[in-house]
Image (cartoon, rainbow, N blue to C red; front, side, top):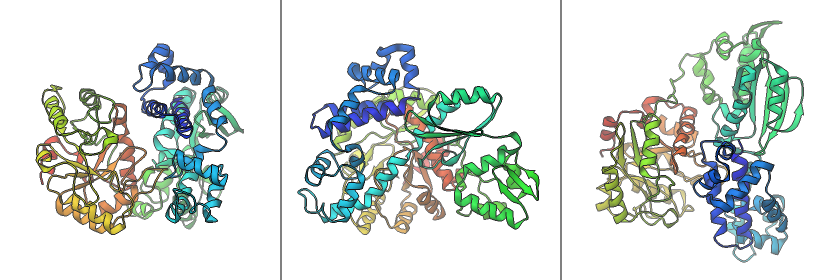
Length: 564
């Protein structure tokens, strides 16, 4: 799929225009990049079916950008993009990947200190040269040093949805040539960021399969059993040719994680076996290897789900036959955070509801922004009432629609929407969107006060983190978990790939503390409702069972849960 490549080029154009001081255009390119990223189809297929007109019809694109997308589809690059990059004498893309640095600040860093990229930036910060610049200080210099690791990670890793989309494209290209095919690695474990894609195959016809695979990207390595290519998005994809009798052992080995595998191999050794990607051996005889279940069973273990394989107690639980029955990918009955064109979403209410119905949902909650969040086109009281009327008159049968709102938690923990409006809603989702630098105690006090509000049902993206962009704020989790239970205010696993917040470790801690959680997508388009599987992957990494996730229950049961 070319979606990732197209979105990357458009986003880099947006950054370049910002650095050059161009007005308005950067926002248009950023909006188009988001639209392409959120497509449920390959942009190439859209173009092949409907030409440039079909590209123009994609929300947020328009004729000028459609022509540029056409060039990328045809050539794999864009001359306009290359020219912009060449005109700027420093690596603004690298520098702007550091949390807290924008177009003006990277220009200042280049002009005053000659900083051209991350290495220059890191050295200047370590040498204390940044704090003396206008607009900077000791704190901003410390923040640069703290955030630069994430910027390095961003160069090496991609978000889960990007890798998932690329892997789907690889699968579609080669699966007809394979008798068995599985995606392995961190993608199979549903890790929030991915370094590369691992694909295991037993081919029907090896030469045809390899030839088809090589068409997907640029050759990096080509051996007898391993071929590596660089996909157009920049991600490396490893194809491994595996014999049927070793497939399960290879899948276990290449799924990882490294820590999990080290402990499993140690267990095998203690039982007199040797475990490798080729199988489980007793002396020279292979005693297991065709399936993962066969390998784990021979070692006296239950089969742990890939998402659990992190050496966080799953090996011991599998030996004791005490693995939890994880929430399944089809268990969710509805989504309680999504946005429409009443605020910063792209689709109509009806469009979102029809998509949710198509997905088999029993209910959908609409939570457009309300209050003072201007960048998200927040609704005022009049618009909230208009939306309530539209939902009442919607008339879509076979699915229930709840009218909620996402409101802002202010610095003191109060909300920016009056109670008289909140009490008219079916439920309220409250989130922090500003003032992220408070102390741990101040931020915890702020969140707990919001949780104590009688109208707040859910806390959205509780730590405010953005994967590969910024870490979340620090909280006293014991207090937060207790407030959740005391007030029937539920924490969310936000399934949006840039958030996945709660993290797997925080979600597991919440469940261990007795909290119930929602998994919501924060969808801003119909296709983003499909992000639910990433949230479910996160929940499974947290050992969540069906009973731990509230939106696996029926609509009638949900209404009872939402009463405080």
